[in-house]
Every structure is written in C-alpha cells, then in structure tokens.
Length: 342
Image 1 (cartoon, rainbow, N blue to C red):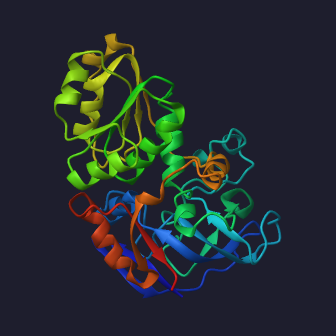
Image 2: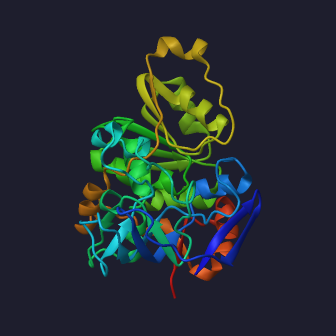
C-alpha cells in the first residue's frame, strides 16, 4: 500500500509500505476512506516529538471500512463503516475503566501515527478495535464524521467540559485554528452570554464569526477591557503558544477557569506569584474521545454545524501537498484539510 512516511524532522514522503496485518486478536484493519492533517502532525514534522521514529506512517484521524478483524473483535465486522478514534483504548486498565482512554496503560493511548503506523495511508491497523472505533451512520457525511476522530472530542472534553462552560458565561477562545473553532461551536451548546475568539490571522477570525463567535479580533480592545474589568469566566487556550497562555492568565476573571487545549511546542512560564490570589483553575489534558458517541448523536440530529471546519479536500496521494497548505493555514485560511480515497 501507499502511506505518508516520516523520515525525520522536516522530511516526509508518500511511499510504498507494507500492508497492515492483524497482529493481536483485538485488532482490525480498516481501509481508509478519509483522513486529515492535524496540528500535532506538524509538531512531529518539526521534530518536537522525538518518540516518533523515522519510518512511521503518520496520522491519527480516519473514517473507513473494516476489511479484517481479529478473533477477539465483536462490535464491528468486515464491511462496517467506522470512525477510527485518535486514541486507542484497551478497555481493561483502571484508566480505561474510568473513561480516561488517553491514559491507557494496557497498550493504548495515543499510539496511531505516534508509536505505530497511522491513518495517512490506504489501510491502517487499529488496535483494540472494539473500544477504538465507532460505527458511522450513513446519514452522517464523511467529512463531518472524520471530525469526530479527534477535533470535536478534543474541543469538547479538554476545552468546553474542562473549562466548565455554563449558561451566561463570557468565554474567550485564544487560537482560532480547527480545535479552537470547534470549541466555539461546542461552547454555544451551553448558552454562554458571549464568545470571543482571538487570533492573529484575519481569515481565521472571519471563520470564527461564521461558526458562531459573537466577536473575533486580534488581541486588542475587547481583550484589554476584559483584562482591566470583569474578566472572562472561561478562557480556552487553543494555540499552544507561551504568549497565548500568558494572555489567558491576564483575561480570566478571579475564580474563573483556564482550559489548555493547545499542544505546547516549548516550555511555558506559569507566573504563580501573579496568579495565586485570583483563585483560578487551570486544566490541561489529552483527549480521551469518550464523548464521541454523544457528539455523534448531536451531529446526526443537526446540532453541530461544523462542516465549515473543512476548507480543502485532496486525494490521499497528495498528502504532502496537504501538509504544505495546512502549515500555511493562518495566512491561507486553510482549516481542516480532508484527504479522501479517490
């Protein structure tokens, strides 16, 4: 088969690689119908995640058809259309039993495109298929479905839920990339008083307005007024940048919440000497995808208007081109780039 192979920092190529096979009884092999490029993939390409070894097929989000299953797979069968979760869950360890699949100690967690070959390929081996796939209803579009593999659960679990967004809140989302924009959409479910998106990219600020932000700006007057005045009830950090986190600490109100989603590429200073008397709560976390079934039901009934998150579509064999476009997203307006089997 063909797949997108990482050869070291700054080096990827669309290569011929070995077809995946069933290696464990709980495995499934899925023919990839659609996948995407994630911000974490760009971190890997930059060399920020040294645990990813050269020769690894990248990618951890996919939708496709089950073509083969191991002897211990019971919830899906060959021919089923499934969403492949970005997080694999053994289903047996204490963390999995507590729905903390991202912390799986039984061989799961974030392994696809990290510790084993991932989804930016024609086929992918999915460990623990019973707990790591979700059947895709025919009524849910392919492009929308792939957002349930990681982007939407991340925005909900690590941003909206960890941040305790509630009715009447003022919510600030710092970073209007795909996950930040998904947080805008999902925060609206809880009827906040106001959602303000902050970013340095004009195209992404416009996308935030289209997707439901009440205001969207580069850090300016609105943010200054909040920082000098009442502050925001919830601030969702979705940029993964030290300066963005510092902005969050300035704009949050006393007693408020900062929910960190962004993947930090370098150390971030936490100024406790300035924060301790504000009584704020700071949360971090890796997505578990435990919310995927619930989010899928919202999507089925038209409650998640997220189609605008996908701005470009390429064939699978143009994955390298998709990386280049996605990396320039702040300038080009590219958000999620969909890669489809042709």
